[in-house]
Amino acid sequence: MPAARGGRAKWPAGWARGSPYSRRDGRAPHRHRLHARRRRPGRPRDAWEALLRDAALGRERLPHGARVRLRDAPGIAERARALIAAEGACCAFLAFDLGADDGALRLDVTGPDDARPIIDGLLAL
Image (tube, rainbow, N blue to C red; front, side, top):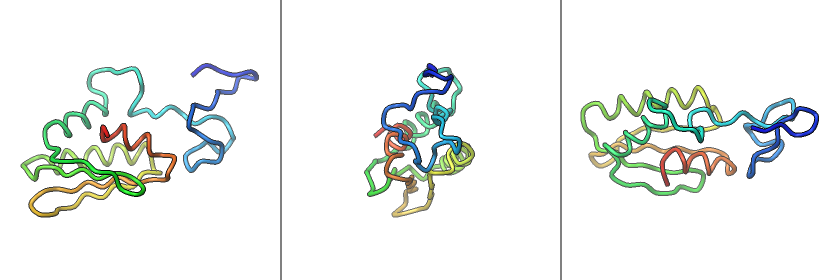
């Protein structure tokens, strides 16, 4: 991220001071590590894309996030739990709920309104 005058980073478009995931010192937040623009094989984003490609049955928006229905097949729940743990360590402002409905898994990802671009990118909406 290019630095502005005084050595402080510029605020990315769509971010606002005082958002739930901004830095306490008033400087711009870190780039979202799991979904960086530069793509390298083996990144967590690739694992999310692989999970969605292998198991997604449908996606829908929720008032404060999104829901993905996943096939209830061997290994899918474990993969989802591992990704949820990695994402939770990075982005505590997101809430994840993995459950079962009608023979399928349901993954709800919710967060503050200004986290919508991150949730949409995560679940490829």
